[in-house]
Figure: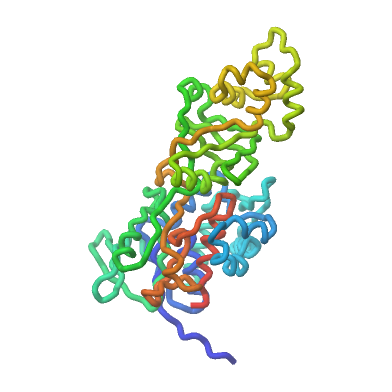
Length: 399
């Protein structure tokens, strides 16, 4: 019989998905686990993300799935292959939570909400002997290297053989991800990349007329392009600009272009299922007494929101020229003013730099301390990729 690894004490700081998964893996390996959470309950951002349907992972083939992680793929791939989309669906089944694949390929619990899964997960952790200390907010280490927590009863310290930091990114501060840990690690000599908004909306200088007419309305189907990145889907016109799934899918490109140059433009194909020649031919037909808006609706099926966008962003000389108008419909430029603030973003890029971590996410300058989840410098789009990454990064039973 192989020798068993001696049981150790482990403290998990942060009770979001990454922290809970790390706790489950360590407790399952026989270690004594205590979770410290600054808020009054676990998984607050997880619950909020699942309020309208918890997109837990994606069903596409793994090779395509891996491409969603961009420049971080090389570091994440071994972990995603070990605990990827199908493993997560099996894990959900083990908790008594069945899943299904939606029409977009996204995977959801049959109950849609996050709360049943979280309750089942916490029951499993309790059965594994995990303890959870709520309202214990981590403020750093003392001169003995012990973790220091602010609690309602005053500061306390704690130590363990293994420390896992699972403190999230820098968005949605009211749910606990305030990003203040970055200052603590930076002071300890651990390099961190500053936060940037990810899966975020962007400001556009809309007219008051467009805001009154279209704010809150979806634009679909549409193909969006920024630089070399193109995505088909839908987005929403907000009073500030644009947001929604198709915007989030290329938000990293839009953001990085804006950060590098001070400007960014997205191009919309408003009728992705018709080619340019077909649109030009239809627009060339006499419109008689029809207004241009009615002509666009009758000949192309362009709805009121897409038509309003055309009138908002197209000069009169183009609107009155069928050939030029056809080109504009297939490639309507929308200038981005700026990204929305970090705290409004679904997630953040930035965090602990990869070179500070070994292959198992242990801090090289602080052996025995690990960083998992969104606090590491990687990002992924919505669609189940972000949550899958957080769970995969926390599959650390090898400790």
